[in-house]
Image (cartoon, rainbow, N blue to C red; front, side, top):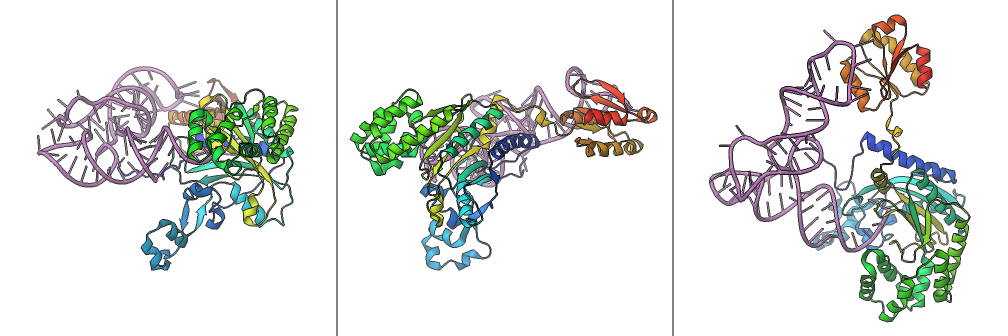
Length: 453
RNA sequence: GUGGAUGUAGUUCAGUUGGUUAGAACGCCGGAUUGUGGUUCCGGAGGUCGUGGGUUCAAAUCCCAUCUUCCACCCCA
């Protein structure tokens, strides 16, 4: 196995079994998206670097896969830039395209580009791979799929409500017990203002986000390191330790930040959202989590994150409201809200729970055993009829040994095998064998089609 | 990007202080059974030990480099 071929780091091949399972996930997600009136779009794997750069922060730019220009690009680079040996400077000269890093930024570009053809609010879903030049780990790849739903051009909180319903619906169908954590960037901003560090929201939230992972002390230490004043950190403590039900938390937090403008707005939004949600019988738990901060810095309102209750694996779905994503492309004041389902992690959860539906593996329903040329001629018309009736069926392409053919059926988990040799041909019938029970009976062509379809 | 582990048949793993021809289980192929699979029994194929250098009389074993996978940080789905 010295010179085996291989694929790039962090990428994967998908086998037939894996594809069946992945499609099961994608199909249920799509079905729910459509149920709520969302329409699909697709965008190219590559975007202009000008579209991508600067949208994900400094770290994000490093994680972009860049595509080399075609032709003899290096000869066009001025010598003085080559001599500097700075990758960053040379890159801008030899690469102007990159692979998409997520689906949200291409979507924003799409909306701005086709603003005159789109009627708002625009509800779209998009299920495509994205690429990140990250260092891979388990459940973290350089190529992975995102399933995004967004509605853009509407400020209504009804959209947030619907997204929570979609989350509930999808995971109900996939049989995953979940908890949806919700926070609001405006509340976080209110907190920052109330403790006198109004313009340090990002530093504060990035640190606070790690609360349940590294604990209070280290979070405080990190904030101090990021330059947050000690008095501010002290004022923050009671807020982080808030306990009780969502409405209790809201009442308490209002006392602290109700006098700030953003804070009050955020509280009002959350009250409305949770007010709506109470009216539905949701299977998933929904709770306010003030430590939820999500990394991306374009969120401006509600923030969502979904976790499995039974399998420890990080978030399997997340998103939020962004007020000005299209602004960077020259179309200001368009608000959107959306979430993204992580297909690969959902896959891992389902594997660990062992809850992929079993039937989904069977692709072929019936296999004709091949006994030879005469028998082929006898079977082929019936095979065609079965297919016409929508029955997935196949004939073994060679008249190999019975054992090999039966084994093939076994491996492919084909539930029925049809045998037609000399005796069947004489009687004008077929032997239908149920591979599960081993039972077999002699039936006519009509009966065969009837049973299988 | 920083730090740390890992790599031996298709798969999961053994392999002693460097020492002859590198093993097992499962899987695969064939036979027992030339029209009956998933069970059983018998037999067989398959590895230049991730790759490239180096040390040594001798390397799967020690050293260096490189790649893969994994873990932590960073960030995130």
